Length: 137
Image (cartoon, rainbow, N blue to C red; front, side, top):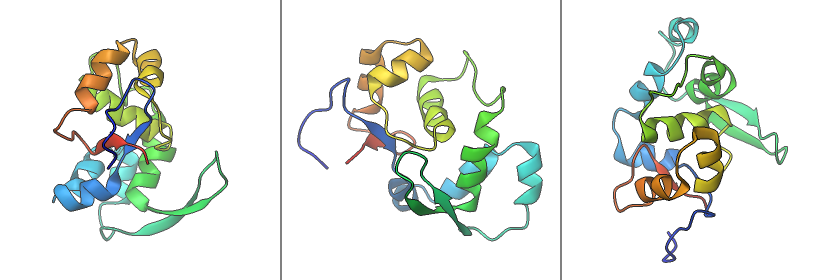
């Protein structure tokens, strides 16, 4: 982790390694975000089933969890996945799911959420880590 204080231009992302180390029920939480169709698909699937995913920005093939892939490629794109009443941390988390966890700054997030970049930055860069939202390195 960098000792520099993040700014509104600092890119953030969901650090799934943080999730795995700090949240025992991270997989249960991700499953709860699945649409009904994918909840049925993954009902009997083993936790941690990995699939290959292609990063559209870099063309790099990355192993991702099957549940993460379903969230990023389908469920997060549904119109009711997030709305104006979604709490800020939850909305930021869901934006990263929608965009395939491509790093974004507080300024980028502010444009998508119609919220203040400073408010977003204060929320996701404080000493407490919410939903694995951390600066990208």
